[in-house]
Length: 441
Ligand SMILES: [Cu+2]
Image (cartoon, rainbow, N blue to C red; front, side, top):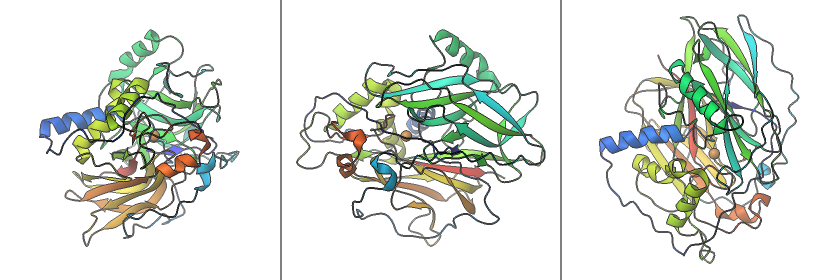
């Protein structure tokens, strides 16, 4: 959902092993997923997709009536001229965000939460250059609140790659504390989501995200009257993605929450996740590298992030359709309840080129909610949109284009052999994620 942020560098490199053959061959053949399978896949995906996906905060307060209008536009079919995007060249865009926080509005207060001590990241399974760590924080709420804004402050921008805040509802607090206590050191390893299992809101259509930060994010202030639900007794998990390509330096990240008492007049913001597969084959002439075979690439992802998170690449095909290797991937999702889109964001990694979110594509009612023709990793902040009503029967489509050519230009890929790229948690793996912030009547 909301990602904020604004100062960050990323130079990641998920170095992978070698082994492998040549041609990517799709594994799961075309088949209509049975409803039960689909439901299970959805549930698992929802659990896994917490990770990454930090994008700017969507429904942020904008000048009145501002926000990108939803407009029709063509599909991103053609490969654009290959020019390095601004932030793709090594994250020079890292802004020093010394902007003072925006003043509180009537009824709001600030609550600062910080990791209790420095944490020095390391690759938990001994391979790769990424660590995802979950830290349990207690906002000590005496009554039900609404998060009306937040400001994530990465402690060490040299290693912090994204931050996502997850709701831990009261019924999960015991499990979260047990997990924390049972793990040596601060927090626990959590590729994907928090690893605490389901619970209310653990679905793609209502993800338990409270906010997030990725490169390009800043302080987020939701429009007046809107807020994210946080109940008395809840905890917050702050998931931090550390990238270790430049070394393992200690970090102590923090967030300032803007809270207001929740009243019947508060309109709740929900986060809807729209993932799509990534199935990017090696280029002709370079397809003899060890991980150019899809199965080997998926096995490598599982080795670095665990069996569960490593299964996302295959689960996405139960959600979105058969494996079709290629630079452009899409996923259509039905709208099942009336909702109003307030903010949108896209999320990809370093090989991302274009991302688009459309409603009812190819029909007279087609609208484009997000169109990023040249992806900039360092500018992932979400955007406010003019409130857009969706009704059951509508379809939302996310489309991403990735390109192997960028690996020739980015320092993060120096010395990293070409590979078949699938969905994975590392910075040199890829994602394709649309994020909607919605209100529901
Ligand atoms: Cu990601």
